[in-house]
Image 1 (cartoon, rainbow, N blue to C red):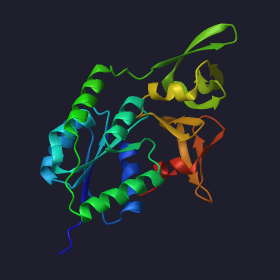
Image 2: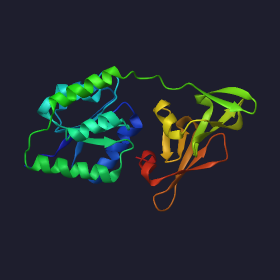
Image 3: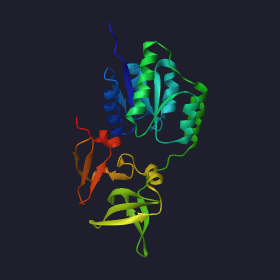
Image 4: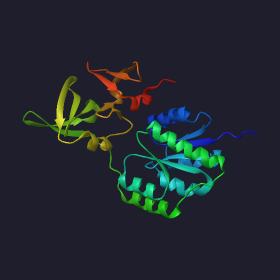
Length: 259
């Protein structure tokens, strides 16, 4: 009897859990995702219940980090860490020869990870778990304070300093060393420039509300009216309160695939 490989996905962002599951279905159709967790304690509970062969663990999760969850799991499963661009963590993963994926997950990178996991499962290789490295990473993560997401953007509109509520922002677009903010001022479309780059701003935004859809565009999910798919793996985002149409690049298209 052929035993189907099983996996757990743990990430506090529903869109990213869904995205990884869809990409995994493309790269590894035989893999069965038996559970999805929203935070560290739930990931541990679901692991003990389902005993999956593979765990995809978001490094930064509420309750317990992905690294702390990995410490509890030990060598009972093959581990793949998923992280935003944390240079410290990435260097540690590379030095420790641990599997990791960077958000947003690239299909080519995921395919390489799948190949390695297949080989390990086929050869019945034991799971890799560098306990000393995981302890080092866990200490690093505990030492780094998690900042609350931005609620206001400070910008200059003419001669005046304005505080823009992030809930009123429809989208943000890279403009060389600045970021152009498209927002609603009393319900009317308005624009302003922030003296910071989009790359610097993105980690400070609420990941449940703001989603990158192009290398130069981040959209407020609450401001989307509809997403229309086009030819050649493209799509356009139509907004509720503005006439602009925002492009979705192929890298982020999977976020808007229908069931």
